[in-house]
Amino acid sequence: MSLTYKQSGVDIDEANSAKQDMGSSLSSKNPRVLNKHMAFASLYDIKFPEYKNPVLVLKTEEPGSKQLLAFKYDKFESICYDMINHLINDAIVMGAKPLSVQDAIICGKLEKEKVVRMVKAISQACREQGCDLTGGETSEQPGVIPAGTYILTSSVVAIAERDEVIDGSKIEIGDLILGVASSGIHTNGYTLIRKLLKDNPELTNEKINNRTFIEEVLEPHRCYYNYIKDLFDKECITGMAHITGGGIKENLNRILPPNIDAEIEIEKYKILPIFKFIKEKTGADDAEMFRTFNMGVGLTIVVKKNKMKEVLEHIKNQNIDCYPIGEIISGSGKVILK
Image (cartoon, rainbow, N blue to C red):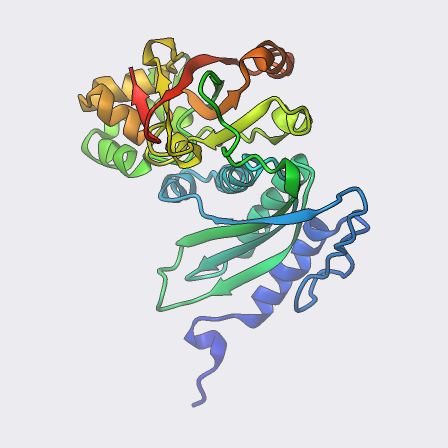
């Protein structure tokens, strides 16, 4: 009796069928995307006459252990938005325009309907931020990964004008720090959330502002590109930090010159109800909460003092909250929570 690849756990026909169904999600009207779905690799036209001295901005990301909760509650589309929005945020804080995303979906058993849903959501999330999902990899690995488990990752290529890169090097004493509202927990702190739910499963359906706890924690990660892209060439932003794992202290410090500090007044934070709920249920102190979570500020923008009003008005006019939370002072490259 012969042993086939299908009998050992990999169904090539099912994988090919899934890839064919992904074709519509990967189709693009962007003239820079030069080849079609099912090519071995992606071709992308890199002529950018509108840039004098273009530099590529590259980043790889994955949505962390939030994946486990998302898949458990059939939120496949939601976790795809989490991944892409987090990924693009990490690139745009350099003042970059996202161009192309490549993804990878790794699983123990390929379930066509679920994989097609994920690719469609990843592609749509990219389009909403003005870029394209140009390809990637779907890998079925029985015996390596349990059936029903999916691991997602993606990479972005973005572009910026070299002289207009926003990397924090122009931050000066006296600049002000603005906080842009998060949509919730985003994609960091979920190991704690899962532990909390394991120990207190009754919290799943407890209500917070007319939504259940699980609905709140699975709210997708907000992407900030469309809110801030028109500010990149205004010479008003001196630095930006995406607030992820480690909170504001261990993200904003990554863009500070060595001779200055960022002083943050935490009483100015508009802390979202979900974080107050978590603090109450875990008993965590403020230091632990601010290190684990974004606490309601998903993006910090450092601006020149005379440009603060312009930036605030621009962002608030797009129906997203933005407000001052601190300033740049003399120091040694640290973030001080006051």
